[in-house]
Length: 448
Image (cartoon, rainbow, N blue to C red; front, side, top):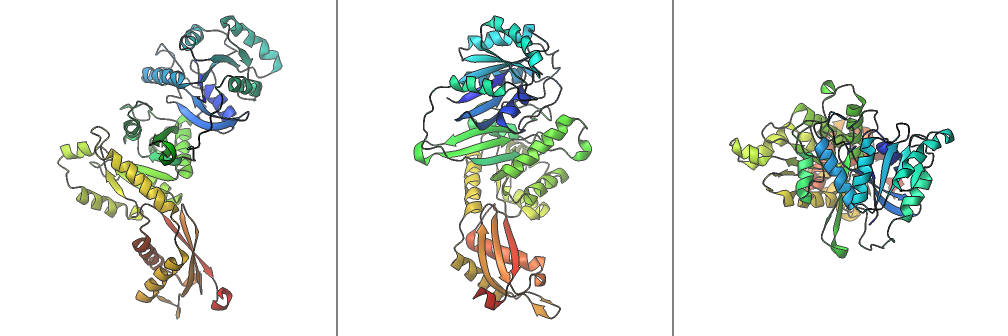
């Protein structure tokens, strides 16, 4: 009921206008036709209303416009966006005037029956506003705007908000769990999201680099108060820096993927079970670890592994653990987008990991666990002194952060800290959740 879509032919400034309305750089902006392909969405609050703002790829009916082999898929995504919208804003380039493609787009949007208006973009100064008048011949409200400078954007916002249906209070609406799906190009990220939704929500192609933006897709399981809300984030395949072209599109795509990891509650790392973890997979895993994010490892395309004679999941999981020991806390799920094998299990793993990341650790049990571990294995002697742990406290969740009050933080060793972490995991589980342990110097008197 609150979806507002920006549509139009390629290179009219839809993504720039999207970012201006969202007040954040979400969609990739680059002076090249066909950069945006998927629907890019962002929930924003404007003029007192929460809306789902949607940026779409440029609608081209002739592949010579963008020279993109995925034009048909991009056009289909734009058509679906129109179908889902409460209001459509048709973005045109005022400097170029009315083109046949503009007229065709306007005709098709009007035929959909969705309320619409025209944003005559690139009216950077008041002297350019006369250019917008040309588009009034279509009988639609026309707004002279400049996405680059913000001119006329608020008037456009007020106009499309006025056309939205009345707001309906949703008592079940909660902050969705943000789940970023990351991996190398062609790992099956978009296919996985489409399989979950049982709908072609994001473009899937054998062409590496099909996904460019970080595409947010709302996903809900169940209804009413028991419903579980997710925001799935499809990301561009993360290439090694040595294989990246020097175009801004590649650089922006990588930045959006890294940003998606930073903003996520849970990150799904997709791996190829036939190829196994590559150096680039390890680099991506390192970014997840550096960001202290809860993680699920998905061995996707298990149907292809079975065809290659790889049938033992435990043996495959052990191999992954050996090659990526730093993500040993992350659960491994074997699945197949094609056959649907274990797709439901991946959702259960996401829920379990999210719960682990935010679990409250009772102070009493936490300290008994640490005390038992410290008695069982003494810390090593350093310069004739031994580390003493007086007290532990959970500072925060997601990531799980624990502060230990000790006699001298300099006496701790990485191996002993890892030993304490293993004991905490053995007691509390915390599958998929990273644990950060900070040490602070205190004397026994200061703790009393």
